[in-house]
Image (cartoon, rainbow, N blue to C red; front, side, top):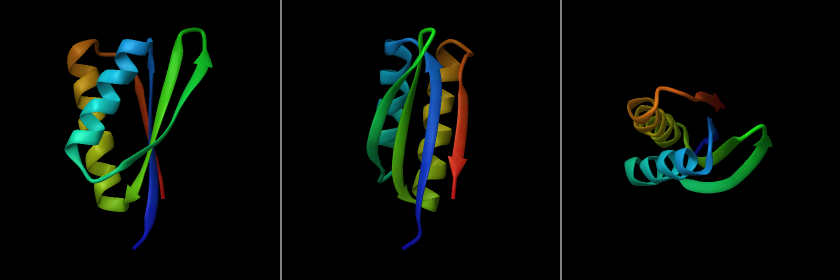
Length: 77
């Protein structure tokens, strides 16, 4: 199995919880870490197989963009 990580960065704690919740519910991924970046920005990192991480990042970004329209997303393979 190929392991992959994905990350969503957004402003505020509520936003990162919302994104992490959507990511965990959308696919079989593990929430690896939540990071405080500074200036109110936070990131959440998930780990799993490539397809699951892609689905989770899309779901987390979709939930976040639908709520406020702010945030960045990244995937690393």
